[in-house]
Amino acid sequence: MKAAVIVFPGSNCDRDVQVALRQSMGGDPIMVWHKEGGFQDVDLIVLPGGFSYGDYLRCGAMAAHSPALKEVVRRAAKGVPVLGICNGFQMLTETGLLPGALLRNGNLKFVCKDVHVKVETSQSLFTARYETGQALRIPVAHHDGNYYADAGTLERLEERGQIAFRYCAPDGTVTAEANPNGSLDNIAGVTNEAKTVLGLMPHPERLADPDLGGTDGRAMFDGLVEALS
Image 1 (tube, helix red, strand yellow):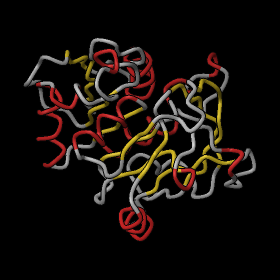
Image 2 (tube, rainbow, N blue to C red):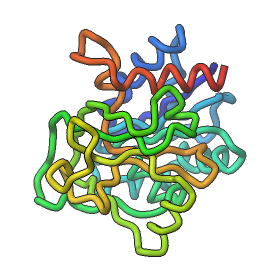
Image 3 (cartoon, rainbow, N blue to C red):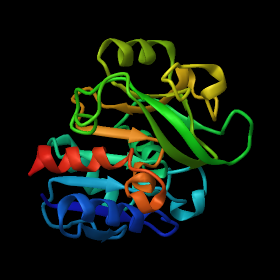
């Protein structure tokens, strides 16, 4: 499998994703600078977390117009899988590759801690190594992770199985207390209708190695390698 990680000024999780992919792939992904409008063909594209362009205007808004992101949009339309983590999720909504928007956290504070998320579906490239209903412990670190979509969009997401993860208690129960940012219906991650694009606020790459304190995120990368190799 070949993978690319798109790197922006302000990215701070690009190397974490590189290491997580290396562990699962057995080789390094290519690191693509944001100004590169063309890069070699790959089987997977990852948009990492961070603060692209300093989060000016809106988080991900400037990145959405970068040469690299325009190429990502073009390839996603052809079915190339795209994973957007945290700031990458914000980029995916800004480009229209995913529905909804990421608003300021409900408490208006930056949230940085481990949370639990419930796997809502195992029927995707990104979640195939998990079981539906499984509760994962994965860190979050964001100021604008409050997912919002209008009622019609939310209904379609539910009907089409596009909600990938919800914030939950350690036992998998979805509760208001488990929601770290005020996201609508505790939504932590969504896919496009074809389930080839996933955006999520938690950072699986930060919990993909025992030395980091856990491996709940590792199965996402292992599953992608298995599916795309």
